[in-house]
Length: 435
Image (cartoon, rainbow, N blue to C red; front, side):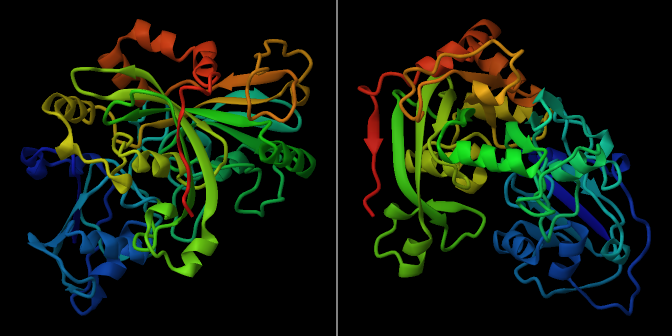
């Protein structure tokens, strides 16, 4: 049995390229008498959920022996070949790398099988398997006896899920014998807030229950906040605030939706919706291709909040196909840049939690480089705050340097510049929820 995974950014010519020699192999054969369904087989082989596999089939991305599959119940035979043309974000808890795998078969049902992917600063090296958590390198931005701030790598899930078989951030923390709070349960030990799998950047980890409770309270009071960097597919000419109610999309469980955009929304959807507020400001824009670097400020912390609110503006983060990004809709120059970039780095949603701030009284007294947040309107108290920066990872950094230039990029992401973008409220456009 052979399974071929091809990213949608690959050129047609590369579809026939032999990459398999560099990937993991499982050599056992399927017994001729076995009756194995396509969807059940892919669920095991890809370490994902059956619903996600069926979604791939529904989108026409799976073919068997060079013929498109329309049903998941097809019975497989010995030496069948499965080809998957995979979109970046279709499998939230699987790989996003370009992979060809030979000789995957029935043994995959019981084998600890992890697809190769990127989890370090270069976003190009293989993902460690489940017994190699200690080999994942994660930068510690700050640490004391109560909590730590890490720079989470892209392609790393924060905590485990039923369909997830690959290492997580929590696994790494435990493998490094870090004391963790258990207020959120064993699977989410130490996790005060989360980042999406493909999103990189600053994340707080609580080492004990007391600090976890305090940090959660400060987050709720908006005394701890985050500023993000994102690359979007078209210009944003002015600062804008989006306010809407967000809930799980009724037709696509992999994404969230702005419920105020739905006419006659069902009652259960309205009841599950939660208020969300984001502010976006342009940092740099390339006039030739329209690609723009923006800063995003969160006033609330909902699932996929930035991605959902940008969709409301008809803007999309590069590679975020779940929320509407399309390579084919990009200008010719932009498309060429992305295709060239994908030869070196695995495509992922270009969203990075760049700046995290918190009250100075939570930080060791020896730390003196405070930041003035006196004019920040969302802070509950006038006090000193400390800001922590999470370095931009190489995949996103190199792309920014190529299209904007080093001097312009370095200047744009300086802390005073990021904070200064959100001081004057007069020029901000509001988009309020109508529900």
